[in-house]
Length: 223
Ligand SMILES: O=P(O)(O)OC[C@H]1O[C@@H](O)[C@H](O)[C@@H](O)[C@@H]1O
Ligand SMILES: [Mg+2]
Image (cartoon, rainbow, N blue to C red; front, top):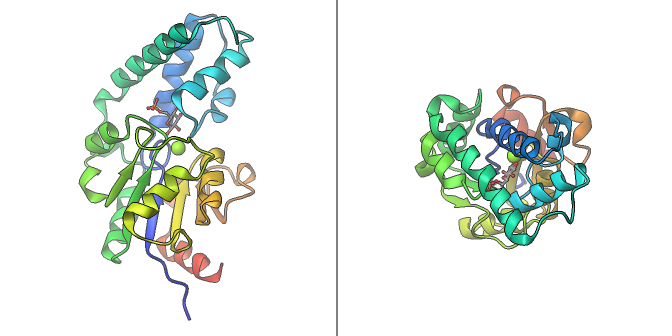
């Protein structure tokens, strides 16, 4: 008997579009403003992590934990978000990462459900700009859940809204925290990025253009 497959649940930033780069640029500018050197390597740890948690990590990197009041931290996070919103203003459907549009439409053609599980409060804005908002059956973002990734809540909420059992879902992520959230939800995890970064993923593709629907489904069936 083949294992039932009902849905694919995607992360957004860094999987469907390269907003991960814009998050990095906006954080880097903010870090510089407060005298902190923030590198691309540091940024890897922030992928999938909420806005406020990301700020805390940056302050930790710069040895400035405790230097700012809660109000000041809110203001810093708001400043980063304003910058990020400026950077994403130009996003259009041409910014969908290579192979992802075809992948998403194959999933739909096969009659499977599509969900989005994003740690971003800007997920709807970005999905709208990409022209993908109405293609997804459910979008769950950071505004609708209490616990951020690596907690499984965002993936479990998406599965619940889709009316499917998490074990019949495949999650797609580019963040270590995200893969942890998928596995914590009892879903099959596909990671995008360097193989060595994702020991917990069921499958890893280095780049989005390498993603193969048939290969993923076959590995899922064998799992
Ligand atoms: O600040 P936002 O848009 O709510 O995003 C929160 C987080 O969203 C995640 O999707 C990104 O991977 C993180 O880098 C980002 O910090
Ligand atoms: Mg991501």
